[in-house]
Amino acid sequence: MEQIYIAGGCLWGVQEFMRHLPGVLKTEAGRANGSSSSTKSDYDGYAECVRLEFDSSEVTVTQLMTYLFEIIDPYSVNRQGEDVGEKYRTGIYSESDLHLEQAQAYIDAREDREKIAVEVKPLVNYVPSDDEHQDRLTRFPNDYCHIPLELLHKYRK
Image (tube, rainbow, N blue to C red; front, side):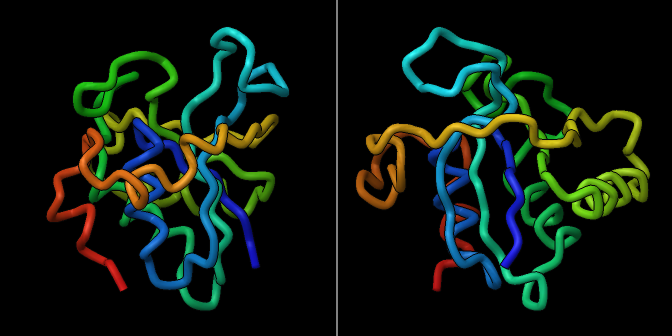
């Protein structure tokens, strides 16, 4: 089992989408690369993200990138849908250099690579979100989500 951290705007929709993908074993809503070890502090530079535990024999980092690009505007800086701010930036974070190399290779292979605003960085800090944000759209399916419903439910098992 491997772990990667995916930021795609508001974490509610990203978690709901990613949890249904083949090879994804577990998801957790959280905050990547902020400076705090708590959710009780003021904004500290984090990106809302989803920690994925995945089986790399069933889904590759390249495939995860393809899935991510289905649900984001990859050219948008600090915004997805109606959510605006630095915490809604898009990115891939990992403690694995190989994951980061694969994610960057995916971006570099695209013809539109110069316009892509998805950051690819080592994970330096991760804080799980509070319980109220975990599996939010599973528990409250009518809450706001920037991902169109047809995409949100595309891979449901």
